Length: 107
Image 1: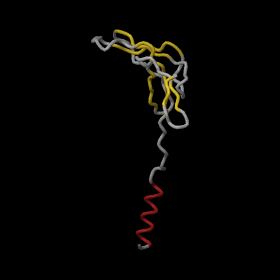
Image 2: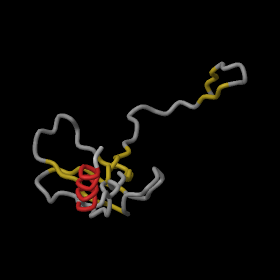
Image 3: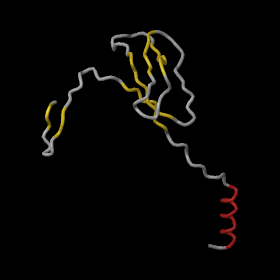
Image 4: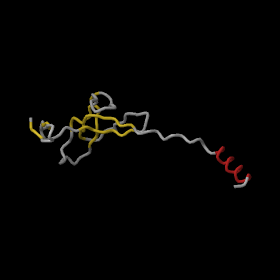
């Protein structure tokens, strides 16, 4: 590599915009308390019932799906965010334990 090539590369590097780290994605959680039935064919929108989406799943944030046209639910997060809706299971939860031998026992 010649001195001229090295000087040119250094000048391009110095004039390049500074490398900035990409903002990291943030996960937020909200409980989806009311869901319209799959048979509902009309317009639907989300409504905030309580709280603000939290960084853990034990948040007090509650959202419901309601009939009709409505405004888009926006929270104005500072960082790029993925909002995960926690939905209750339609089946009852079964309690079980696993013993030291790896055998599953229903409680």
